[in-house]
Image (cartoon, rainbow, N blue to C red):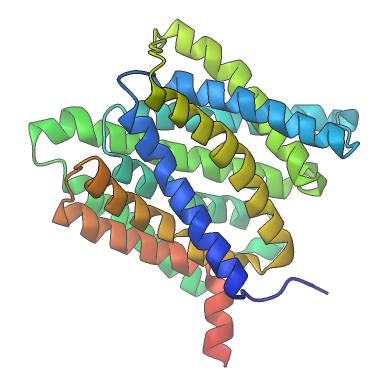
Length: 304
């Protein structure tokens, strides 16, 4: 029997805080991009956060599971994680932070499609298929809004496409974890595999492609501290703790406040333009994603 419970006031408050944190991560990357290359910063934050998770595991006397090929699955999940954030790091160089967050948050649609194929108990219901259709229609509208201009084709549209690929990579990571023995690992171990591979792969990639700018301004240090301690360490562990205690469908619906926060904060803090066509596409896409991810919650409301 599932012992997880519906959301209470504390859970809602914590989720609102997490959504604010997650919406700020791309904005902070964008704001410091001229002084610290985004891919390099993501590599460094992954390394620092991996060290913190390892220290936490040592304090708990928790060993990293490597037997029976678990390390191969863990490294594969880490590869998907590294790919996702390589694409995110490149995307913020070409498009707005708000666009990046909206397109990255298409991940649940890709995950739902993959899980529908891999796990019999994750088959999509008719309402969820409608959500998938809405999400992809919204993506099309959001892309078409930028295809009318040369700047859109050469710059912003390319960044949006990279962010969409990052969402697909995140969805693939979810499918891998849910459909393999990784689902039985404690959250700290799954996170450690991803962070370690993120650091090991992204640091040499940043060096190879020449994205090594690091001007140690106070803003860069604040950004690196925020990305490492708050985003990659504390917020992910808090999210996993909430998932263990509360119903995932309710949490998942609330998490889609993140793109809305990101668009609003990007316009406020970075003076990013908010195009009507993109907003229309984003609303369509997010509505579809809520239908896909929040199906259990919506079905219970409809039954009542």
